[in-house]
Image (cartoon, rainbow, N blue to C red):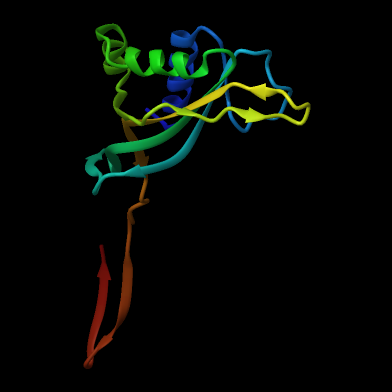
Length: 164
């Protein structure tokens, strides 16, 4: 699984559970109509060293990756909707869907009320939760080994001619 596949999986999962348009936070374009949700990866990391496997001269690196994801809900009952989202992550249906895709949602933060006053002097109800996800990632390295090496020279008056 790649980084893009993992973040797209989470966006699609949030969209499915909440039943509202879900977009990436930093997309260019107009805001969707209320209600809607946003997803933003705020950090990515890996744990330890990757496993390495040599396959036909290439090296396959495999390891666990971690994402911290900010999810925000805009619209009526924002706190309640994100509380429902958090609870759904513990259901067998969602757990199995994540497992099948190689994703693990291993923790969530508390749901935060971040309602704010807009320029038109109306409050926009909004809530936020952090999601912590792990997924497996692998990539292939092709180091480009030498096929032939020729060396000529003299070592302490000894003629050297090596062809490997």
